[in-house]
Image 1 (spheres, helix red, strand yellow):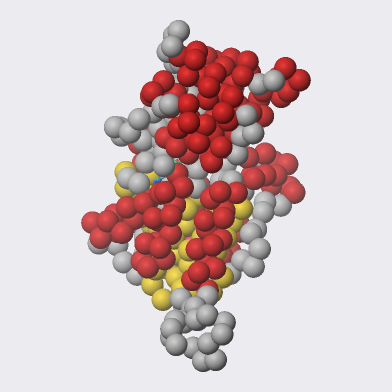
Image 2 (spheres, rainbow, N blue to C red):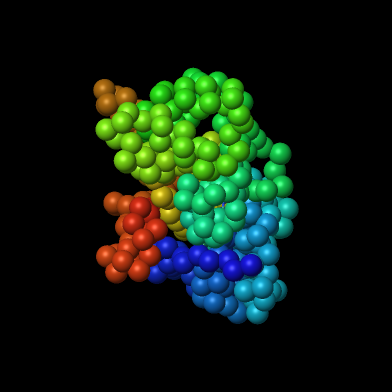
Length: 312
Ligand SMILES: C[S@@+](CC[C@H](N)C(=O)[O-])C[C@H]1O[C@@H](n2cnc3c(N)ncnc32)[C@H](O)[C@@H]1O
C-alpha cells in the first residue's frame, strides 16, 4: 500500500501552533501523518502528540512512518467528535495546541477503492471508517426518497439540479440497483438538461461531495468537535482548523467569532448585565489560503482555508 498525501498549509499551521520542546499536541486528523511528523520533531525530546483518525489505513501507515517517535506518539482509531473521550481515556493533558485538517486524504480519494472520486470505476461506499455500521453511499442512493436525496444534494452540494437528479435516481433504481460510481455518473449526466450535459463532471463533483458529507456526518462532527477541542486546551492553547469547502469554513468562522465576542447584552442596555467576557482571541483576521507556489505544486490546496483561535 502506498499512502499518498501532501500536507496542505503545513508551514502556516506550524507558525500558528508555535510548537515548543516539551509541549503536547493533538492532531485530530492524522491522514498521511504530515502534521503529526512535523509536530513530533518540533516538540522533541519530551513533548507528545495524540493523533486521531477514523480510517484504520491511515493509522497503519503512521505506525510505519512514525516508528522513530514511537514512545511520544499516541495513535487513536476514532472520531474527532469524541475528542474529549479520547483525551480522557489516554490521560493526555496540558494540551498546547489542537489541529484538524478536515476532509479526506489524497489516498482516500485516489487509491482507497471506496467510490469517493467520480473519476474511477469503484463500488459506492464513501465511508472513512470501513468498520462503521453507518449507511454507505450505495444504501443512501438506493433507499432514500426523492426529497431526502434532493435535500442532501442541495444542502451539501449546493447543486442547482438536485431535484431532477434525485428524481432520475429514484426512477432508475426501480429497474436495477445503483452499485458503482459509473452507474451514478451516467444518471447524473442523463438527468441534466441537454445544453449543460457537457458540464456533467462539475455536477458530479458536487453530488459526490454531498454524498460524502452525508455518509460521514462531516458537518455534525465538526460542530461537536469545535467546542470540546477548545475546552480541552491549556490556557493560551491554540486551535487551528483547515477546511476545504464553504459550509465547513462558515461553521469554524462563526464558532471562533462567538469565542471572541464578549458581552451579549442587547444594544439598548446602557451597561453590561450579562458579564460575559471573551474566551478566545482570533489569530487569523481573514482565512489564510495556500500561497500561489503551493497551489501550483498541489492543486488540492486551492480550496483550503485556515483559521486559528487562542484560548485567553
Ligand atoms: C486531509 S486528511 C489529513 C491530512 C494530514 N493533515 C496530513 O498531513 O497528512 C483528513 C483525514 O481526516 C480523517 N477524518 C475525517 N473525518 C474524521 C473524523 N470525524 N474523525 C477522525 N478522522 C477523520 C480522514 O480519514 C483523513 O485521513
